[in-house]
Length: 398
Image (cartoon, rainbow, N blue to C red):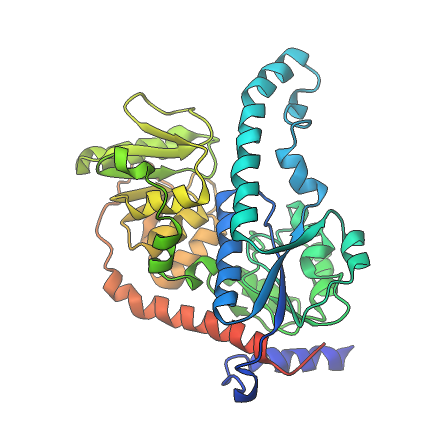
């Protein structure tokens, strides 16, 4: 067991060596498992980005259509009012509000999967995946919070490629969403990743977790950065919702537990800059009559609305990513007692940590010099590309 681990460390430590010439023109069969059925904008876009980038490298790529109960439960019509099971009136009222939303979510995200993601057949459990005996030269898990120990994904061995019996196993930009793991969580992680050929995570804290588990690991960029700005513009070109808003500040709240916190700062900045306020959301809570409200935004709408905005206010990781991709002025407001590790890690990595604040009265609207950021972003993007190239073309197997 010790020799296996030391061999693994040596293998990963040599990650950024030159890719072997002999393999560069070979087409590999690659399968990806990620949160493709989570039905949220970030999950859909990172899935699309990783597959699209790998296909651009002339690889044969499919996303494993893994739809376990914990994903389907989130968009099921039957469970829409389960929180109010003890009060039938509350449940009925909630269902009247939520069922139409679930219908639209199904239409938007299932349609997106059908049109933009090349998938395998649908699987609902680890057992089904094991019985399928999926074949590929390379299996990739990631990105997104697939290894978050407090979410169902982080406890699901499928997200650690447990069903793979033959083929290289690689993690790309996996996220824990936490700074530390308990002893039990650490032991679970060690048991799941011991046979990975290469390991990479999205956050600095994730690198520390994996190294503490006894394995080498590198930090890479979220898959959405693998796609150029020009290609994202083409991807979202058919979305024209932005045209009716004039010059606007875009607000994208990932969570609306306290929308007033985020909206207060957004309206102050918009007032100073003479911008309209456009809010992407699934609830009108906190939305004023003077605001523009975009409900049921598709992945293309989301990208387009950020692209055409004059300023972005968000508490979302992927809202932050696309603000950077489109070189937007932006600020992240977080109400949490501790910073969002995903956003905090990204901003520190590229030298923009001052764009994150928990003070809603602190108005951050100073310009960002993206010319100064270019070398840093290029450095980490190149490292991420090299990681994937090495993973694809490595002759080693597990």
